[in-house]
Amino acid sequence: MPLPVQESGPFNLLRPLLLLFYSGWYIPHTILNLVTSLNLRPLTSFEDFKDHWFARFWTWFGPRARENAAVKVTPLLKDARGVVLDIGPGTGQWLNVFARAMNPEISKIYGVEPNVGLHAELRQNAVKAGLGDVYEIIGCGAEELNTKGGVEKGSIDTITTVQCLCSIPGPERVIKDLYPLLKPGGKWIVYEHVKTKYQGDFVGTWQRFINLIWPHFFGGCDITRPTDEWLLTAGDWEKVDLRPGVGEGKYDTMPHVMGSLTRRK
Image (tube, rainbow, N blue to C red; front, side, top):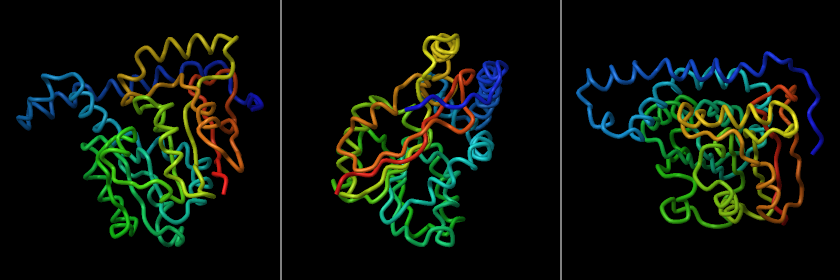
């Protein structure tokens, strides 16, 4: 994969610090909400608390992240067809792209979202997008689809992963397990954080340093995973159209891979 054209400057290295501040701002807000609602159990478990914290933060930040990424992600998602497996939809910030008026070729969508704190808004957004009758929420992780999800092999026309493979446990194994769910000729649409290609530059070290705390502030997101490499080796692809994120270069701590892969017929 060719290196992206450098269109960013050194100040881009500071962007992760700003995003960490935004997330951290919601810690006291989450504690106050739990106390005033007398829901004290999450305060006894850091993992439970992080779920509530991230749900509140993402309700605010998700739409803003969507706005920044829309110019890159929307054209990709418009290619979704048939039965769609929507991995990690969060609150459903991309559901308008799947709306019948935008994409009448979608017949069913399975939204795989393990964070139950996001389900209510995800369902509301599905209804708002006119997808209430075709959108089904599966409340487990992508790593549990084979045992809990009830999705059969060879039943999916389109898999969509938008900034979610960075946060699931055991991502390399999950990617290999998702591949058989695709029908022959099925397409996997991707927009994901990946390990920077500039490992010999400062950004490689900086990315690893930021990643020491980043997963705690961003729902388990790991920005150092070579997800693009794992996708390429997941199965037999007839067509691969993967490219670096638009305008990303050697100063981007959170670079992306974007595009699609088509399973061989």
